[in-house]
Image (cartoon, rainbow, N blue to C red):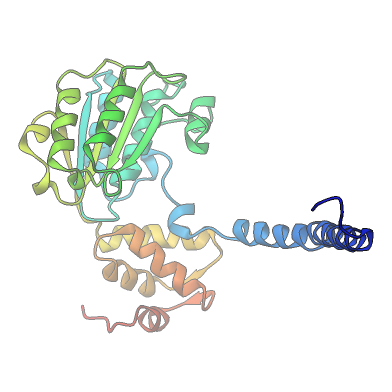
Length: 289
């Protein structure tokens, strides 16, 4: 405003501004913190069962004994490859095993091929504090520029770990140009780099990539194995799960442990005593053996 305006207008404007400032200050002090605390409590209140009970060690992986044994033998013998391809249907443990393998090759405790989950490296990888384990979702980062950025980063040594591990999920979603850019790096990778490619559609991955990877095919998990894991999780979560209900969920999951835990989670939200009828009602299907 110009200096020639009446002083009464200036006073009213100043008073209004002061009132707005005081109102905003009161809201931030009185309303916002409790609302923030409420949201924080809700966010920390519950974790989905498939996330909470995701295996952290090879010993916890269900239904993939041949693959787990092969990976453990490689770690124990020090014969670690530079590129792996994990393929199989959803929920069979591909990404889970990739993360466990990344911890195991960098674990400071060499007494076992399993990660100890207690050393600073294991804890740092689990918490995300260590940046030497890079997860990339190829479904949303499928362009050649994304792979070029990755290729530039590969040259740098890991900051904490022994190996820098790149886990590329849904790798079949990469474009042709992106696969060509990745191929050169996989042909002559640095000694400190390990690639783990995971896919549900291996037929879409170029043969030139396949030939440079150790391939592991993850089988569908049997209904009995799924039921056994569900009974263990239910016991730990204080859920009364009927054995017949566990078997039914195992069949409905169609070999996917993640789907089975999601069904159990859904049923547990209705009642703490889960029988086959509850499973049928919540899954919306009629069981056909």
